[in-house]
Amino acid sequence: MDLLTALVDKGLRRELPTRDEALAVLATSDDELLDVVAAAGRVRRTWFGRRVKLNYLVNLKSGLCPEDCSYCSQRLGSQAGILKYTWLGPEEAAAAASAGVAGGAKRVCLVASGRGPTDRDVDRVSETIAAIKGRHEDVEVCACLGLLAGGQADRLKAAGADAYNHNLNTSEGTYGSITTTHTYADRVDTVQRAQAAGLSACSGLIAGMGESDADLVDVVFGLRELDPDSVPVNFLIPFEGTPLAKEWNLTPQRCLRILAMVRFVCPDVEVRLAGGREVHLRTMQPLALHLVNSIFLGDYLTSEGQAGQADLDMIADAGFEVEGAETPTLPAHRAAGLCGAHDGGCGSCGDTACAGAHGHGKTASAPAPPAVPAARTDLVAVRRRGAGTDLPPNA
Ligand code: SF4
Image (tube, rainbow, N blue to C red; front, side, top):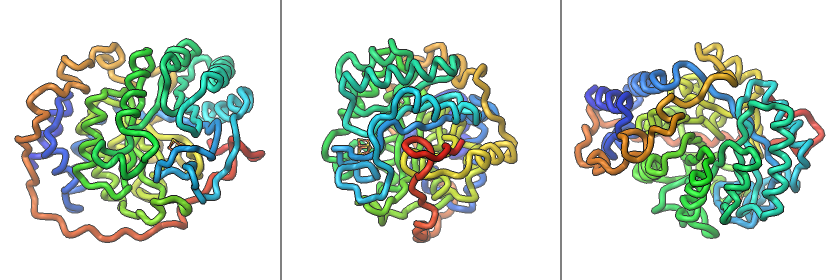
């Protein structure tokens, strides 16, 4: 398949595919799917071997957000029956983090609902980072606190944060239909503030919100231009009580195509399979490990994932290995900061490949119209354990 040969070659050279090539991956047929996974898997193995990095979410503050992100169960006016609580204390958060580290996580993601932190919130999170690093010196800590104001990224860096997450979520063109209380540009600004402070930037997307293939390609190309070190790919969990509750648009095959496209566009970046994998990939989750090199262990912010032990069993059964704390996640050129905007690596968006006019297009017959996926509301479980409850966390 000419398309896949070209994409593997580009992935091994860290060269940006054309937009047409990225669109063609999303348009492949089910008959071609295993070839697509195998091709993107070659790129994944070149840069990350068979390692899977485990990340662990700690929801520091849940619900009651003033923002109106349509996909979010914590949004303004959400009727989803999620846990709602204010800031966990540093020791409580560190105890939750320890459960994830004991399960094999090398990164802890500290997340708080809200538009962005106050300076007092940054103090709280700084104390929490100290409590976690006091228990686990080598663990990576990523903060995810919303839009950052001037100086806050520097303060988080000084407090010991390693990374900052702020997702672009969807394309610039459709952002206003998903959220009205802040803009795509606001999100880009926060990612750039994190990068300027020396934090490892983590920024990703949510698929399944009714977007077009072109929107998906737009947001992934937007991410490549921003050049984060990690790209979480979420699949919408259509929570009852949110505006997108009826958006059941994804099949396992569609999810795999999206992950393959992200891998081809961001070949040497930590691509993380994030929320919604159990709901939408279901029994096809192990195939996704050939595309991503990172997953969340255990539960998500407001929903329950499969048991942490099931995550570990899946990784072992599929022939992958959990990445140890002593092993660098990123390839050497990227870890050394050699992957900037002018070396032809990820983030280089100034070359002619960006024009998108020379794609190889589809090479096989047109796919059948996609089947309408069944709404699997039975697979959506609101989190009732771990942080903010008296029950032990899932790790
Ligand atoms: S995504 Fe973040 S900012 Fe948006 S509603 Fe949810 S918690 Fe608030």
